[in-house]
Image (cartoon, rainbow over all chains, first blue to last red; front, side):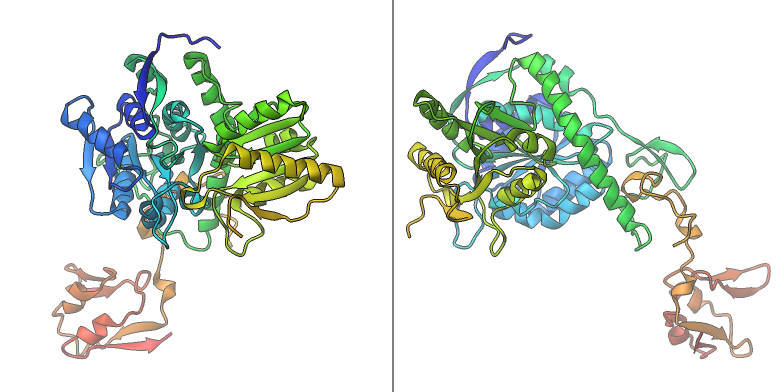
Length: 410
Length: 92
């Protein structure tokens, strides 16, 4: 695919790619607190602020809870707002994440995905964002530094869309993406500025009977984030669900518009299908693991095995329709979960995928593979073993275990 | 629930109030109602200052105070603070 504009290739790690994209996104306020493996993002961004390269108010807070509170407040004034976090930092924001989505503040946050304590571990897995699955934030997971860079711009456009008005998390795997140097094609500043545009505001009816833009403005006072009693709370939650449903379409539209501009496409924006058309055995995963799986798919295809990959890019909203379409004809499916739901019926991703396939007439066999916790390396050999398991399942018409662990010492 | 209440499609997003808070009567939350003994009341106005809901007003034209029971939540602070014990809380 050809790009409509000339792009420069820069060596950036995932965190630097986020910071570079943030620099180009015309952000008004950044409020953040450092935490590994996200620290480089705000460190780099604070350099841009100090050098006068951006026109952004940078707020150093005393905790992540305060960082998200400051982001919400800034966003409430109509400012374009950004932050970054990971692991325990994201967990400390937990309360404010719900307040931010409930106030419909389209804050964008990069999360360098990291394990949660205890035991203390700074390495990559998806435990942090999966624990915030139901916080009302859109969640997009990137496969490489290039996609990280591209997703930040899309995140602002998606979250700020008038049919959406929700905060967005862009997830990048800790260290595998956050600290690994890659070639990243960057767009010219003015092209990005035009793409992200100026933040749009919906209008609301205030207690003064005026219909005004939804932002804190002394000349048009309004009550944001009020008490809602049992007779109204439910209605506001239903509105959030509608916004998520709308986001399914908006994510695709924004992704397509960006693809036309940059020449880069990640499936339809929600799901990336890799050699899936005639695939009989399919691996489903999120994030950087997609790259490893693609390599293995190529090897297997060369051997005549009908292997395919479905990479979920948008986990919230969950693209049920696309998943049913993509997996409905497969014979056996392995869903890779990089977090655990202790005592649950499989990991977060597998539970949803398996549930989505309930209405398919002939179900494929579905097995959950828990992998990569606390930064445990996942090799092409291990992925190959998963495909071999699936082949065996198809041949014997029997899946031996519903949940398996990859690379775990028994 | 009253049929006048808005559906999720009609309500302002994120719970932005489309009515002033003064239109939301909180007086029916109370279990105890303040009752004033006019003979004991010295009109010192301490109850006006202490009422956390602003439900006791000084009316200069009447040269008297007025209890707004639409907003009184029955907390009893006025009765507790009254130096001449002119307010008693009675169960509704």
